[in-house]
Image (cartoon, rainbow, N blue to C red; front, side, top):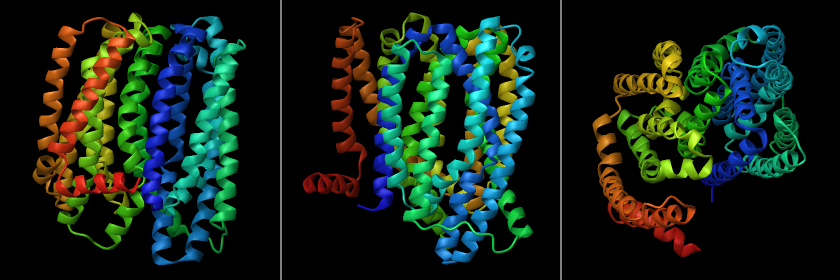
Length: 499
């Protein structure tokens, strides 16, 4: 099995573990910390998350340039590029610390209307630890990016799986021993440092990557930033999408509303993670296709091939959540989090199409034609967040998320027009080939789910599991018989025969 396939498989294992363990740990963490402190924990994490965009998109830039140098067999150019990049990261870490110091002395003012004195004191300590964490992990992330550029996905993803398992066990132990939110952020910092050390060792010893400044190239620095600045804009948009609501609710409402909103965001982003498992390993391949100057038709076929796999996975999650989501949240974290269901569902609905088209974004990145899309994303999201700021004062988290997903919907429409104009993507063919049969399967399973809810109306883990198993069997059967084409069916059957 190739590194590409193993990388995608390990990504799915990571996502499965992250989602399952996260779902198991979250109610435990909430119970031990309390709704208010859990809200504080997510609030400060979101606040520091804004500073993380100071990465300026360098990780994706490293993947793209390393893949390019590797394809061109330019070892000297690669060494020089990596040395310059690490120098830039050093400057970024200093900027992060300086920005952190300024914000630290203004936390009282920012959250004076929503946090108690005790919450503010805890917030300051967590903020200091997380700023240090960020200053270390951003440049450390370059090692993972280098592995991706070399299409060596197995080691870093295996390390990430082990990190998550160990971290989860230590979180349980820490909270059972009376630890609090401050202890959690310290634990995460220690785990991140260990991962950086392991990935660094692999890059330097196994891949034998060299960081050597042969000559300083001002044009190269300009090229790096000309590419990375637009990745930075995308990262900024991601912050706006998923972090802004928590900050705004922390300012306008209280930490409990932040906790409810955070649960909805967490479930919504879990949904997107299933697509990112595949998209996370296709950027090097997209770079190769761009270098080879493939036609719009060829690129569309690849996007359809990836999109068909993604929609089958996402379709099952979406249908299952529509049918069972409300009961799940009630059983999982309690009735106080009921609004989290609608927040998560709205995210899932509006992000489905963009997630199946993520290969298009990889092509834009690889061809350095992402500028206009990045600007469109930023403008629509700023409008959504600004409107959400005022709407949330009276309508809380639901008002906030409606404004966010409204911006995402408009952005999705514009993006499809952009794909056609820039790369001559065959959008009609994409939607027909990707969605036609899958939507039929989803609608049928939704109908079955409605019937199940009518006859099995008890709210318990037992009835939840029974309905979930029935829906999974029906979806898998119809998906295989109806949604998959002949080649996809043969691939699955051949894989099963090998086992």
